Length: 85
Length: 322
Image (cartoon, rainbow over all chains, first blue to last red; front, top):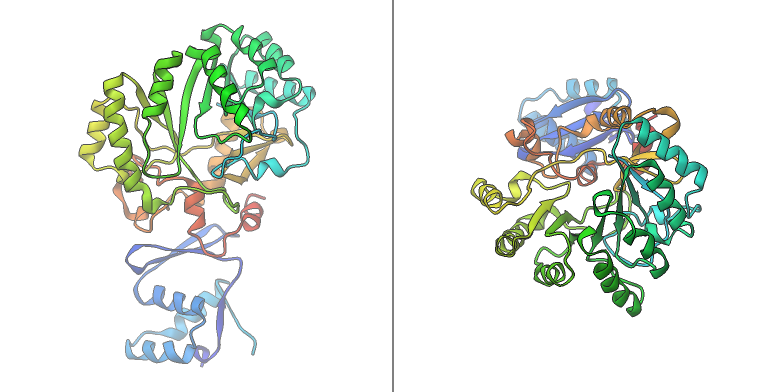
């Protein structure tokens, strides 16, 4: 499962905490601006804080969210990278 | 407008100074060739003023020649000074007619010597009506009364320009935290009421935000004659090495004088560089605030906004402009 890996935010990616728990993520290379809210924003901050994927994956399951899909989307967009163990 | 940096040296030592990173450059004084290039640029841009900044611009060893050169253009000279102007350079400024010259003196400047304080009083006395006072708000609780006294005693312009102490992006100067803006606003209101009674006009510099004041307070400021607005745009500070900086606070947003033929083109280029960040502001709630969205508020100093971003550092910002 992809959610069992450990991730980090790509060091090139800049982002900012916004009100109501939202996060705005900017890829400086493409100048693309993505707004995350709710669960996705919490998941982004979890990766930033280095919280064990197992812990938040469990919470994700409880909320019936498709973690794998989100992680794949972010990996493909170059927003996050897998941390090699 | 565009501001020409003619020296990076200074005889003051201000903790809030936003030019202090610039002071670390190896070159200390503008050459005459470079000065002429800057003047050509300003003239071809159709501007009516030549604005000199530093460091302390009057410490340039050829300051009198610089003033003569500028007077020969027929353009107005605007000087940004700490007021500690060497006696030998005062005469050439006294000679300029009032309608062709103005100096903005920052009253918070802290001199490196006691004698300089005496000198500043002499400068104010000599230049009198050509002087407008500028006050930088670092401590949110402040009283402008002593400076109103200067205005009355020396016959200065009946105006005080208020600036918020802003951070240098990636630098280490002291600045006013946005958490203290509301306190600063209360002090501004207290001082504005006194200024109305003294027939002195207050004017806001860049970086003020709408939510510092309630709508009623904005109306009150207007009623008291305060020129109060929220704006943050490229200042076009031209460094000694020929870079046109967005402003001293964000020297990473810049373009080279070689690549630009007018101030209008420079503003377009710098606005393009900062466009990515313009929808954000200094507070997390700014991006959903109607005042920012309808451009009634600038969202505060861009340097403060940039500091909110994770992973963004001066080097990343510099790369983004390439």
